[in-house]
Image (tube, rainbow, N blue to C red; front, side):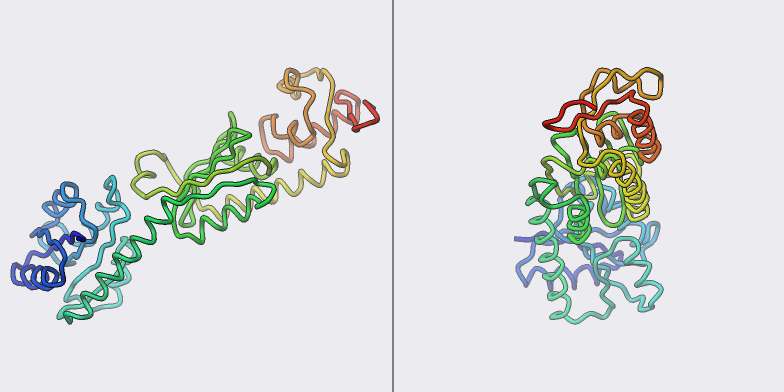
Length: 304
């Protein structure tokens, strides 16, 4: 039996909503204002919330905004039920995180239909959140993995298991990104540059992100910047080291010093190991190959 939290400062409206929902087989919990609603939502974990907009002290808009930040409740469906029938109010409600907006006086059949639709959407979202994905990056591609997460409408942790990398994204935002010791845009560039190995995708809730992730940036802009940088790096490497050969050597100097203990490695890995923008690290690798500080090894022919 689904549990519905009904929030309205008008006792008559609360009673009408509760009666309609109860007759339809739902369990109903009531709250007469915003603070009580947040407390009961935390204690009762409702499957859906029906929420009035105009309430004394704390408006419905503020309630839904606070609800979205509560653990385990960030994705709970919220349907506004209000006598305010303006486009501005509806748009603002959706912007604050509401899933639907019902205007008073409501019709019994329509109310139940929208409640059931909200519960179905939540069930589908929970199923997606638990399913996840896994496979090989070479078979799918980083672009496709990211696009799949965005199309799901959820947030997700994408882990590249063979290179110790992770990015958290969803709903148009990039929440965090790590590649070994690198973070932020340096990590994102390296994830795109390497583009190999096993991956896993774990769908998560907004509440999970609120606890675990510090910030966010617009994903589209970040991904575009990474793609541009990596495309340029790949062109440079393809011209100087076709086939991504192994590099040997004991390079001297601060610029290439971090490579000394890890060689031999491929040209792509060398560019990803050095700190900084991958376009600049690729130029350093290409220049080192040109002066012999890094020796190219072609399979079957040895160093040159």
